[in-house]
Image 1 (tube, one colour):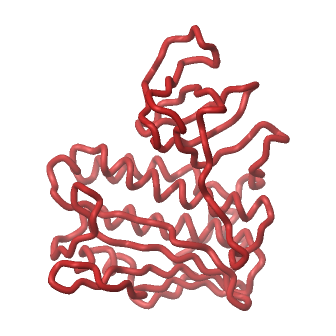
Image 2 (cartoon, one colour):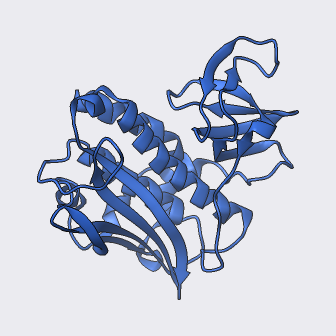
Length: 264
């Protein structure tokens, strides 16, 4: 069961792994391509098979539902639903909530796309875990949240919150082993590969975990760091598919050990 879920999650994230195979897509209506995380702005919004009000309804989406916007055609967005099925939704019924502050890596379209991409990946991970049989059988599941992306000096930094959550989404301490640790390690690979597209001297992914006191979250702390130095990285080797990103990642602790057990 765990292997099947891990495989489906990996396949969901896999398209982002081909990041060196094509140029990044700008977030813009200019070329009709968005590929961003959207939220349904109305209640009972109809997702249809085709961009036509007479087309069959695939699903009725509750307000606030997350969807991946793939492209735009006239007044319709082509979207990917939580179950990976593609559909069409009226553009005026979708909103985008992400914000980029001044301290983020830059405000260029490409780097905005990067932040949207990794937030999409974390959102897809969480959504697929939530909708899985595994989630219905377990009271506690892993959860990832992209906190921000910044450039400090010459280092591009992405901060990620990792915790275990209960059925309501509340962070809880747990001594259980994480059966999806391998997929979460793959998540680190994908994010780091995408970070290497941007101009910086080094790249760092910092995972933060909650600090508990009597079962309550009282603080958050940095727990694991994964760093790549650009001067030590053979980008041609990685682009060609001959090299492995883990040959260049320096970590404060091995990823398989870090993700093996839920934060407690």
